[in-house]
Image (cartoon, rainbow, N blue to C red; front, side, top):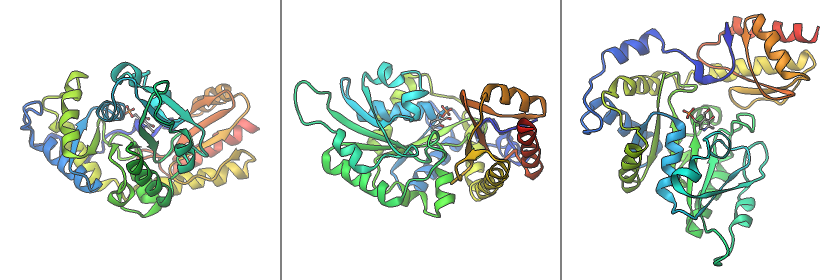
Amino acid sequence: MIDLRSDTVTRPTPDMLAAMMSADIGDDVFGDDPSCNRLEAHAAELAGMEAGLFVPSGTMGNQIAIRCWTQPGDEVLMEAGSHPFNYEAAGAAVISGVQIKTLTGENGQLAPQTIWEAVRVDDVHFAPATLVSIENTANRGGGTIYDQDALDAIGAGCTERGLRAHMDGARVFNAVVGSGVALSRVVQEFDSITFCLSKGLGAPVGSVLCGPADMIHRGRRFRKFLGGGMRQAGFLAAAGIYALEHHVERLADDHARCRTLWSGLTELGYAVREPETNMVYVTVPEAHAAVAFLAERGVQTHAVAADCIRLVTHLDVDDDGIEQTLAGFAAVRA
Ligand SMILES: Cc1ncc(COP(=O)(O)O)c(C=O)c1O
């Protein structure tokens, strides 16, 4: 089966498994798991931030960031297609007591001016905006990469206005490889970032939240109350360390295969926007029927709407898999 539903489906490679098996472990809730500590320090260094916190999922990383940067009754600004608004089970309302104000962007990305226009004046009627969260790459935007100028303007503009800026960087290493800009530079003007180890980087579990030391210190307590304090988590952290050391540059292969998919699908007559990273959204009438048809031919895909299928390339999809996928889509149209 070729599984293009998401880059979350990857299995650890034999070398990653070997790194996990030989991990130095302790009890991370007591703070003495050397692999977790190493991963957190390494992640913080890559992000150019003071500290890191290993969390079970990207969702938990985002939710802890929202909890750290807001008070109940605050407003958090984000793009309408963003993950915390659409796919985190209203966690921001439940955990942080905040309301999310969604803004309309282009390809999942917010223009700085759109954000500033949404920040309301200080008035007892209004929920004060205290946090802006942006997604890079923007998943529902098509895996798009923010321009560095826009990121700098958003981060610096938030600081000027007394707001915090968080980056949901679930796939930020796809942005790093796609743009050639180092992670520390990408988030230079941001207060915090969550990035996932369990997507294109190929680890089975885990994300890291990075930010200032005092924020991460408070975040560690929130992780505990959410049930995210893990014990011999070093086995999982070792997979993350391995992923950061061996699976970042190879994301370029996923991007190249994604372009092959895009050009092949375009030749077949499908409407597909040119990809920037590892995902394409294909317009297909009767998407659910097409997903079932493709699955019968050994290709798993994901219908995100009645007329749209998402395909994501990753570590476990090779060139033959791309060919098989294109043959499947050719048969859909036949
Ligand atoms: C943009 C984005 N943010 C956050 C997440 C959440 O990650 P997790 O599934 O690890 O909770 C995802 C997951 O797909 C995502 O695509």
